[in-house]
Amino acid sequence: MSNKYSASRFSCRSSCLQKYKLSYIKGIKIEGRDFDVQQKGLAFHKIAEETSIDDTLPQITERGIATIAEHTFDKEKYPVERALPVFYKWWQRYVVDLVKNQHYELFKEHWENSSIAGEPLCGAIDVLCFKGPVIKTAELNDNLIDLGNGLAQVKYEFIQGETVTDEETGEKFTDNSKYRDFIKDKEIVSKAQVRVYDYKTGSSVHLEGYENQLLLYGYMIGKQLGYSAQDIIENFKFYLFYPLVGIKTRMATDEKIEARMLKDVIEYKFSAEDYNNTLLEFERAIKDDKTRDWDAMDPKMNANISFSCGYCQFCGHPDLCPLSAASGLEFPDTAKVIYPESE
Ligand code: SF4
Image 1 (cartoon, rainbow, N blue to C red):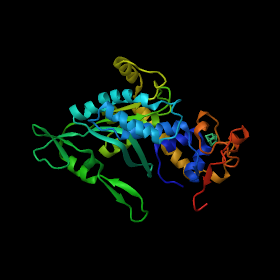
Image 2 (cartoon, helix red, strand yellow):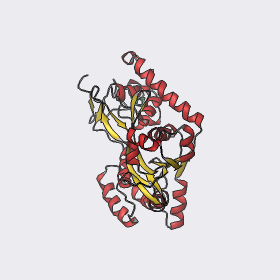
Image 3 (cartoon, protein in one colour):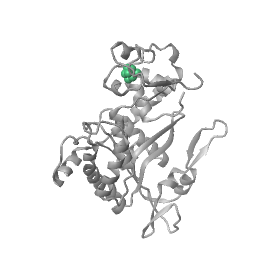
Image 4 (cartoon, protein in one colour):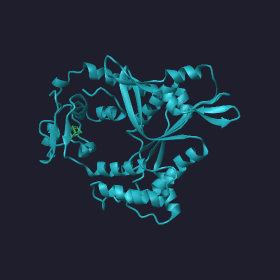
């Protein structure tokens, strides 16, 4: 059983328990089965990950076209290159401005390692803009960004601490006790400011189904800082950005691109009650994972046929998902089931 929890693991668990069992409990993988929707998403994520603060639109476009060519999906159905001007506008407004003018640090495809209910938890944040807590200090060091007038901002690398390996279990976890000791006797002028952005490459802008993912990112970063739910609500912002929504339409003018970009961004705001309830839900799921008799589970009773079967690796396999196979969906001959070595 894979021992790390993540937002996608929780999301899989709530959407189809059969898929969850196969992927996360049994560790079964499928090779040789690609889906267009995933490939176009991977192409966009790679383009975004390679984008730097000083990139121009022609530079992003040139690299983007090469990246798109490397991915196998229907390029006429999904003209991903048309999203690049929208992405560039978004990048300038939501990322470049923070980094160049507001002292934010930028992290792309940023991994957080944390824990929940005593279990390891991880997540890759597409874009994290982080402005550390501002403290009063006369002594500067490599962990601080000098803001002048006796003020300094703590770097995220220091707050995150070091990755340590538990000698008994081999489990990796982060230890930020040095930061916690450092900050104990400091006068804090302002709390850390966090902006989390997650790219979604679907065809309609919506928040539903992604709230828990964003909240979990807030939890992991907040935990590093020792922040309460209220601190997170007051100082963090969470967004989804859907750059591919308008790619079917050519946007001829700058104004149209700008208008499209603004429609493609959605912010998630939550209450302390939402936050606590969601974490409780995750804790219950972890407990249930440990006590459930997975081998006795009926694969048909716990499968959930929905639109997401359209990109489920197990779809149509007569043994792994008999319900989808019985409904006429096919598992391609070219795909291969990989069972973990212990199976
Ligand atoms: S095909 Fe659908 S029902 Fe079957 S495991 Fe995948 S998501 Fe679940």
